[in-house]
Image (cartoon, rainbow, N blue to C red; front, side, top):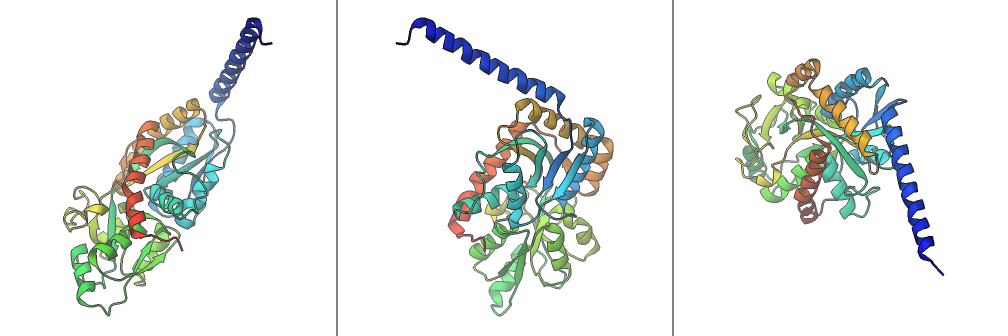
Length: 332
């Protein structure tokens, strides 16, 4: 028989266990970090996400007393690297630097029943490190100066065999290409690459007729004339390229989206560690040297709260999940 005394004793034991766990967690977080931190970038070196990660990691190394190492784990639209973090111990020693492709590729994988992780539950936002506008680009040999002209070109000449590239299946540019095909009633072949750097190389070589990524990956080439900027996906024209119209101006409002680079940790990482990493991120992106480098690549320092990073991810999953489902995007 369960007596009142036994119930009281059980309650006291449970409270003591919770208190002990809380104290242990607090002490662990207070001593953090005590070893090297891995920052996973799910794309090859050279793209915007990699650049932002290395700038942040360098500053964190200087201020946290431990080395922060950037590790490139490219492939599958960024999902390979994301999965490494999803399955890592929630101790703050394995974190993820990702971008707008994260919500899109993850939603596409989930709709195809091929997701190795759950985008809604397996990650904890740390901070949006930077906002970087998105642009759609083409090589100079394509006879179109904006996205509207590009679509009209393919509508008029059905014999053209154009390829568009992306940073992988389910990535942002993959969705862009499929929306342009559907809404413009044109045909193109999707060529998935493993990141922004190889995508740009294929554009520069003329093997792709359409591509795009965050502005910093291509701004130098646009200014040199080795690539054309056909549109920006921002809600307004961008200061670095004021003559480039937005996708909304050109009849593709569904492609409007905010470009960002941000950090995530595995779910269940202690809140004290998440908050420490968020403070370190904010300090890193606001350091004068980083601000200067960001300006060179048209990135805007942010250093948001964890809640703001979580909200951005949730917002873009909700925005693009129905589009991906409608288009029937495949990941092959």
